[in-house]
Image 1 (cartoon, helix red, strand yellow):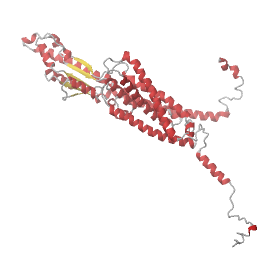
Image 2 (tube, rainbow, N blue to C red):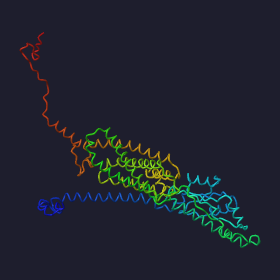
Image 3 (cartoon, rainbow, N blue to C red):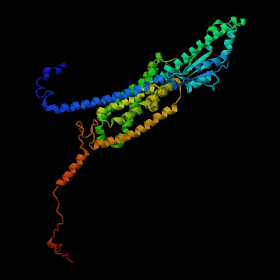
Image 4 (cartoon, rainbow, N blue to C red):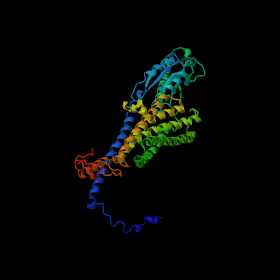
Amino acid sequence: MLGIFSWRRLHGKDDHRVSITAASIRGEVRNRVWDYLQLAAISTVMIWAGLSLFFGGVYRRSVLANNINVYVVDLDGGAVGTNVTRMVLDTAVTPSTPVWLQNHDLNSVDAVKAWVQHSGWGALVVNPGASARLESALAGADHYNASAAMTLIESTGRQVVAEMLYVSSALTTTAQAVARQYAQIQVTNFQATDDPAQQQPNYAALIHPVGFVTVDVAPAGFTMSPVMSTFGYLAILLSIIGVLIMWKMTSFPFFARVRFCDLALMWPVLLLGLALVLSLYQALAFLAFRGPNFNSQALTYTTATFFKFWFTGTAVAFSLGLWLFNWFLHLTPQLMALPSICTVIPNVLSTVSTFELAPKFYRIMYAMPFYNGSSLILYILTGAHPTIGRNVGVLVAEIVAMTALLTLSIWIRQICVLRGISDAHGWFHGSRYYHSHIPYYKDVRADAEHQAESLPPRRAGVEIVDYDDDGVSLTTGNLGV
């Protein structure tokens, strides 16, 4: 079989070919060099567009962390609650850390947990009875649990990356600083007292008066969570792009011979079927691999969870497929990568960052299918930060809008094909790569006008033919009356 590549079989085949430096093809080489320079310029624009979109969204992330608010909640009401709250609120505010505020509206640990899970980033709670337990220990009680003084409440299911990088670290760092500061103050006060009754305290409570435990009310910090939905949707999107390009390159006969209404129905149905299949694979992959890396505290994975996961991926894939196919139908081949880059980068960014950590321009991420799909997935798996109405509404609105726009794009594309304006690959009339068997409509009109002008002129007047045998003549006026 490899013999077909033998040079002997090519003997004499190059005899009629010329060198690339030959004068006979110099013009063609010059054209190709110019085309490749244009491609290099287009590629430069595309790579800088992608890099600018990504780094523009993350390069100031560390100095915008104070757009995130975390809260201290005093449920103790005693000396411990007052001192801890004051220490927390006196924490220096820097651009790289969240801002501490106090919440007076919550009256129980469970209420704080519910609030953080629903809408908050995190909270430091001074537990009820913290002052009484510490006073008892300092008076000589044997047992004292410093960790019962404070509870750090976080919700990694809201936005995994921001929670792990900024919120969780801010809660832990502040609680540790408060514990050290409180211990120093307490030891200093103990050394300064002259009351003998205070000379036999619980030394563990004296040296370590306040500690904390951390509670994640919507745990999503398992191994795959920061990239799970991102790379799942990215794999779907990249698979769709190849199919859409193939559809664009091979759809010329359809546009030339099939009715518009059939085309307007066919493409959305095909895209929906493709989205259903690819998102099913994503849901099955997560179902298969969630076991060893799935947090045991996450919500129970049920049959309903699987279908929610599947259909959420379908909505994301369908909206992105409609969006990209609108572009592909009209762009020439050298530009088809541009909408792909400008679609992939913002969508990926919307899942690995959050609006609070990006410039205001990136509020457009609210409209990104990746963002809305990932938010839904995190809610389905953890129950955190429910924004179902907004996320579903955005995806449905995008699907409806993109379907209407695709209908218009198909109509325009069919007109361009039938009038010879563009060819099968998308090159427009006038390009050196344009090739279509359908004549350009202006050339057809010009040919028709030229043919009309080349016809011999018709004689003016009317030729009258008389038949004299009937005795009636229009020429002499004898009408037989």
